[in-house]
Length: 271
Image (cartoon, one colour):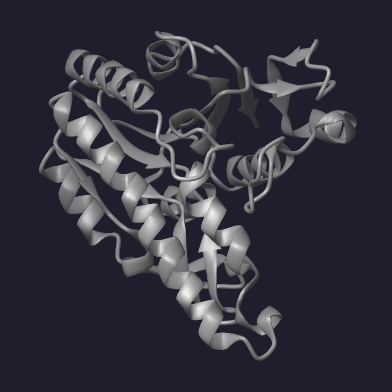
């Protein structure tokens, strides 16, 4: 795995209790951090950029204030909007603190790179990001951690960028070979919510046929459910030759290790 760059997202549903506001799953974070440490120790040429969702931290506050929709949607309530913007930023950073603490405790030199401090978007598409801090982190053999966060937006005033939005921009800068999206769903279901037919592989050309069966998220998720994730990742695959994406569950111990080591333990998206 010499000089391979992988993007890994730990989903909000995996690392928080999405149905209990502001509740991290600390035991799960500890377990995941140890798995990441073991894989990186055994693959010194592997470079990892870690991202995480906001789960019951950012999404709870974001729904309350309508932050992702932007300032124009608020009418005259700009003061309330910007207060909410600041609160979502705070809550996202609180969860990042738990993530970083777990990684440091596992012996990983993790460093948080907050998108709200370094990214500008236009209609939720990242147009500017100071990526030098991430490049320097990788050169120093640190583990850069990004996350879903608020961002100033040229068209909307402010918005929320999902981890996938952040990854979409970073993919053009760092050319990862793989993007791994770890959550609690086993992958993409052909018959959600019945969950009896797991799709092991989705090719770009086959996607339209199964599109109608892919559902949204059962918990509050202001950045869109599974359908949005699949479509955004397929767009990335179109733009980045050789990129594959895997959507899988890391709920069971060992599945994250297997995915990082190249095994398809969920649904694989390919060109």
